[in-house]
Length: 282
Image (cartoon, rainbow, N blue to C red; front, side, top):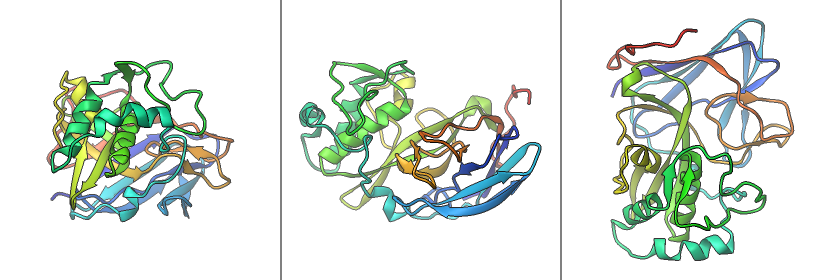
């Protein structure tokens, strides 16, 4: 596999920020994070044990470069650990709602759940998410079909998987759509499962964006390249503030959930990925 790097340029943050350090996956080993324009040290997230970066800006733009050496690596075992939070503990009403989704056994069990979840959602970014206002557990969807983002869909998908006894994890990172080439403007998330000793990756949201409800394992039903940066939801910053998930850097100070820091640009350096035909002005 091929080594590559992702570069984020941030406007000068108002204060310290927290950032992921990259995630080992079968697609490549995260070989390091370098920073210019700021002072870097590290801290260990208490629930998952991940090493994250704490960066103090030193004036002017702040540049973060995530490097991956292309060497395949297994997912960390902790990816599949259940960390209790309002995003991972299913309410009793949700468990009842999921009863029909978790029927069946065998190697296609995960896929059958993925397809069932796809039939419950339309892709979108609703102003009111199905779990808003619920502070101790993930509620039932409560309707035949709801609108949801990749985050919303994956939280529901993972609840269905865990209800069926399937180990699963949430991966946060960046997605570079093929039509944009070497740049993107936002982050993305997807799901990894381990069932009967087989590790598979899933992106229900991208299937729905393409109008597909027959979900297949694998990460790119929508052509592009993705960069895995961290895993887990309801992470805890130093001081205890919540980070819902860590892909884009977030402000280090606050009561939480901690807000993202806006990026001036997000660029991919990969020998097989050409520059995009239209590039944003930065």
